[in-house]
Amino acid sequence: MKLSPSSHVDTFCRDNLPPFEQWPELLFTVPEVQYPEKLNCASELLDAVIAEHGPDRPCLHAPGEPSWSYGELLSRANQLARLLVDEFGIVPGNRVLLRGPNNPRLIACWFAVLKSGAVVVPTMPLLRPGELRTINEIGRIDLSLCDHRFTEDLLAADFPTPTAIYGGDGEDELFARAVTRAETFDNVATAADDVSMLAFTSGTTGRPKATMHFHRDVLANADTFSSYLLDPGPDDVFTGTPPIAFTFGLGGLVVFPLRVGASTVLIEKATPSELAGHIATFGATACFTAPTAYRAMLAAGDAAKLGTMKYAVSAGEHLPAGTWKEFKDETGISIINGIGSTEMLHIFVSAAGDDIRPGSTGFAVPGYVATVVDDSAKPVAPGVVGRLAIKGPTGCRYLDDPRQSNYVQNGWNITGDSFCTDDEGYFWYQARSDDMIVSSGYNIAAPEVEEAVLAHPDVAECAVIGVPDEARGSLVKAFVVLRAGPESGDGTSSGTRSGTSFGEAKIKELQDFVKQRIAPYKYPRAVQFIDELPRTASGKLQRFRLRDLA
Image (cartoon, rainbow, N blue to C red; front, side):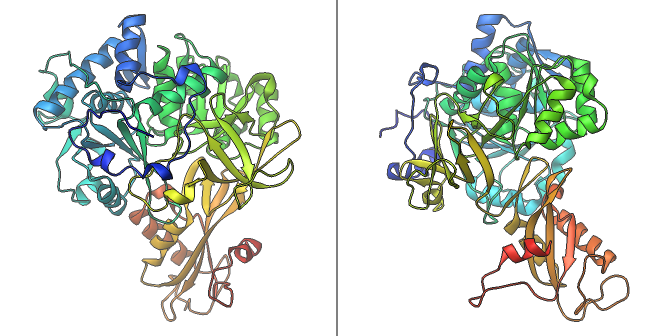
């Protein structure tokens, strides 16, 4: 395998790619993913679309804000790119962190970074200082662009590099500084295999991994899953709830619509019922969200608001057959289920239209191949549960991380999911193969939550599992062993008591403590105090016994 000549001046990303022998086998079997050697994904998604469809087409919508046309997005992205280069000294290959909720300004920043040839590092706006410091340790951030409402934790992370603030008022606001710049910019002619983005996983071992995605990768999922299964057009309107820091959101809310000249509704935060209202207001035709949101929209009586929708895409957690059938009965819409990963960028197994089998995930998306293998990486027979293995035009490349050899084995991407197939070749999800908890579409690493709980001075031991929950799919539950002696918060000693109703004040104290250390959506919504954690004779935690107890 050989990489093409890089346009990166800062070679950090190229220098930290895994060795070629640890890469998955990459497949370019469909014509749509056979890209030229020079490729800038921002040019393809914006400049090239304007060349075909013109600058006046609607592009970005946001509740309560004026819509942006393609031409307006191009002008602002170009001005920002000039500012990044001229004032901040950004050179191709530098890493630029983005921190903010989904809105047009965030998308303009995303495009500006890529146009300048730099590497975009999108992050969840709720990450805490410790989490941000870890991202900086791994990715060596050169500049941060932050929404003015989310600066406190980023500044507390004390990065040694500059932070520029956007949104709000003041002469120092990023867009105000950029407005005097020319509205044209010569996009850096990056290589198709130059790294365009570092997308961070949720971290199944408590420390996230930086997945390295090339410029061609950003387009590949649009040219496979979106093109073959959705087949959207310029008049479609996309929307959904996942932040663009989740590659599910980046694809569904940015890359897929802009690839075909369509528009997208960017929502900073919305309940499922509010999402249904936005779908009705903007006439959205495509929605990307988790199964829990689709269930909640039905429960709230919002089915009538979804009449404009053609595509309802579900990922992030298993879509039960019952949810699919109920949604179909009430709306007439067949939810398109799918599984993807941060390592692969987006969905690689799915089905649409008449190919859907409720409860099944589907087939390999055109351009990908999928199989189920045993622990020796040998394919198993239909009906036998094993590990899901994937190959395609995208694949796992961790930034300088020994866990590369865990994910890539014998040329296959081993996703960490347990599946089986049936005699027709459909893939049926069984469970996660690791300790990842998927709750309301969010990936939450049990070890990370455990580490946060254990930092409390009253906690001696902690183990976290996911427990079934009708509303969220799974619920984060912490089993906690308190140190001898501390007060529970209700005036009683908590050293020898156990049970789910014991120490409600202490439970709230622990939950609030965790929310201050990691993103709030990760906190344990259920806490149970026990006298000791179940372990084997060798000291290994027996999580299955905790699941039985739960």
